[in-house]
Length: 482
Image (cartoon, rainbow, N blue to C red; front, side):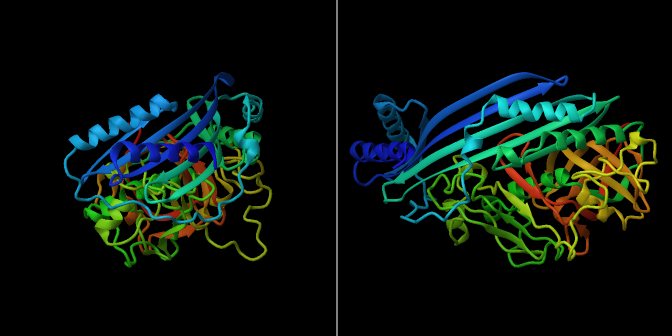
């Protein structure tokens, strides 16, 4: 038994003694350790590490539910947690939506755990920062390299008892030249998969290619979205569209069994290896197909939303899911099949890029090598574009209408005009207002890249995996001048 599972089991037994045999209780004990190396002005300025063990108790007593948590895990701290939660339950209103506890259910096998990432120190992260800065070739750089480790145990009064652990690494950096920013970011289960030199070269090439941007009028443009931009689509689709609570309350666009997306779109949540193998209610996690060949197949559920929808939990409970809804946090958009014998990269290009505008050749011109504004997987998608935009990143996105998932936001870290398949000019940042499901609707997806990139969420350890996308239309509503 792991230390966390033992801790959870102790709280369950204490709850039985203090609240009585009729009480229903579930306990998650989780240890998380995160270390972050930050750099700015091309130098490391901060190295921080935090490790916390948290115990969360949810109690259903006499038809009422309450929850509490503590980071004080000695005998007095645990007893205080149980007593406070019992008192809160007795003062809470009746909980008619209580879905009951997860019965004993075995976990699925998870991918291998990388001990080296969990134990990584500041030297390993600093090495990747140094490689990033050097590869930027003198441009001003900033960003971070992060490693994280989690282990947890779950127990409830119905007999469910499970444990697991996960490790994660991520790097996100920008390079800047004369006000133009280029970005590169990656995530993964192993720190050794993060190549600081590759990411630094990509970010620098984008910054160099972003000089002297032109302004374009608002309107609908054909676009190629790089994986960094596609990650925002997945984030909002997960939070507002495939959210089981929103679905049960008819606030989601999702219609199960309907062809809501282009037939080239398949989206799955793949949590195993990226997070603990069970959720906050002890439900085992598994791959969940949300969209298959354009057909919406499922939404994410905890036990409460599943009971309301007449189905079963998909393993997406969190401490906040009864309030905010259960959210799939590890979405993957499936890439297009690579042509037989193809490497997935154009000849002479490095991973993540092509023409460098500082080389003296026209942007996107033939015969160039090196890294540049176009991710390797996006170059083939641009070939069929008569006139449109290449977009690196979407930023500061906010939902205007949840039901149709109309989102407004800004481009960031590089936009380029593409004419006859070639990048011809950098473009100033643009504001957009666009329904994400509509942009991915039947007939709207003109192409999907053949390679995916794992990307970190901007605010947490969430991971998205995405290829580039070629879309028929994207609604830009303003430019840098307003």
